[in-house]
Length: 437
Image (cartoon, rainbow, N blue to C red; front, top):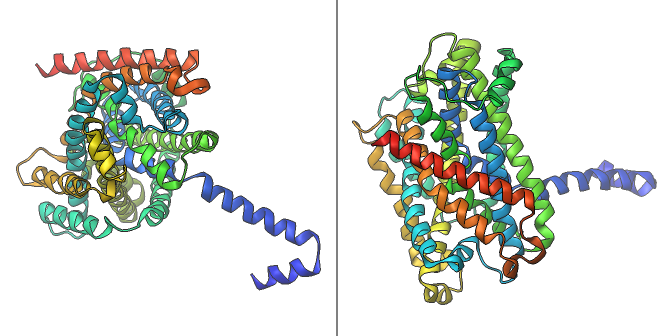
């Protein structure tokens, strides 16, 4: 820094060079953040398991489901974010839903509470299994208790910037590891393209049925209620005005781009490494085999450390994001409580108790004898589809209210996509119910 200062004093050009460098890194730091945090909240085990299972069991034949789901995720989250930034009354997205009909407030409160519990259930279970494997203690339940204890140490502090920085590093490491493996596997581009435009559900050939895996992908990506957590991270970043629409959209595009790279890399690993070797993903150890086969013990450590980092970060993200979502939904039902605490969730004692609920109660799923990590992950993400019709239809109505959105209401393309999302949501929910019963 001294050299830069001296150079700046002795020349005219140097200050501009230094300024440009500073501006670039400052701009990157200030322009990207909530999307990265959202990626890790979204990603976790849902994408990791569904993409690897789909690739290992069905090759690229279900790739079109992932492509469609990622497009829908971008459009849905973008509309959610734009509503919060641009609505004329400064409403949160859940307050907006409450304006449509009181049903939405009650539904979103109950649905968010249940899904917050279930999402953390497989995240905590997975993190416990990975930690147990890393330390070779064969005590996954005790390891899950340790995970919850560590998260408790972070929650309640001003940890946003720290979490954001750690997540960027973990996300980069995970992406590089799977991307390296995917490139090394020389993926069949023709089959990827064919699967992306295939629009068909193959017959069941794997451990998990093709339709269940397809619904689980939709639930994990497009229909996830985790998409509603993004605006709360935006608020913490200070993005609260219509002037932030562009930077929010760029941040979200970057986040979706990262999701595409990670999901595609994981899928390729499943299709090109696990499937040819006859490895079906029934446990997390099966997924680790891909890196171990290619990189030996070093790859084994990279996988487990990376997966633990992502799962742990996802537990932190869900344990801080979902309580905001749940309390906000309760405020739609009980407006007096919102006024009492001036809409500041952290000051409401309910926030603390909800946080404890979504962090501690999922431990019951880590008790020996409960469903395995892979099965639990696929099952929960499939169940997640139940709320997708309500979310999609409500969003379609809300984002077209000119009285609230003015010039920021949906354009014709967004309305077509949201209509298709509503149709897909209803179809998925019906298929899940049919499969279940």
